[in-house]
Length: 112
Length: 142
Image (cartoon, rainbow over all chains, first blue to last red; front, top):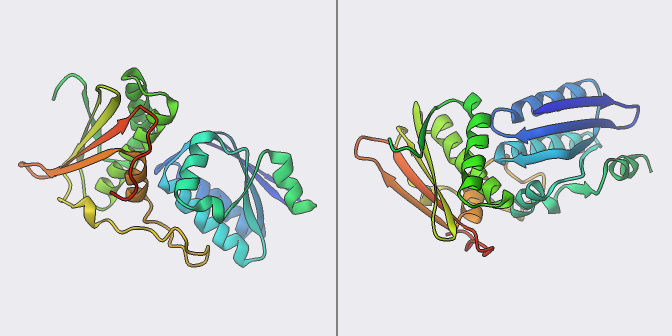
């Protein structure tokens, strides 16, 4: 999995490519934690190039969202592909997390 | 070990290669992308549990096509377990109350049409996962 982090003034964009599994999910967790430690609270995860996540990825998403909201921010998802969306829906995460059709819409949800 | 089976190291760093192999074999056995990814996910959840909770040191996977189905068989040398004892996550809990974890077996049950478990005589477990290819949804929670 590739992780590209773009730290902005208002929103941190995290672009992922590949599969989020039990091996790669901790890398994502570390990347978000590092940004949180640097003061980031508003995150957009761009999932356009993510074809797969297991429960390991869901755990990271849940933990990161709890942490961000506790500090007044949020983790929002952009461009979620079909199978990842199915896994989010089955797990009840689509009722908890905010999903946007693309990167621009997710970014705009924070910046108005 | 028969020709369709492959042995894997019981380590998390084998997961990406294992996942790609499962999806590719499932596809070759007639599964479209969605079904192949379902099988990949179910295998990953079971293998991860065997490694992190069961102390597995060795894994053997087999993918087979059948009449309108694709089947994955996972054998390990982990401590015996009973998948019926896996707890159900509370899907309606709020974000704050939601436990981080507990989703693995739940997803397996929601994605697979049949799940069979038996302890192996030599120790370890064999889990058989059947994914139908007719577009029907698995009965939840069974």
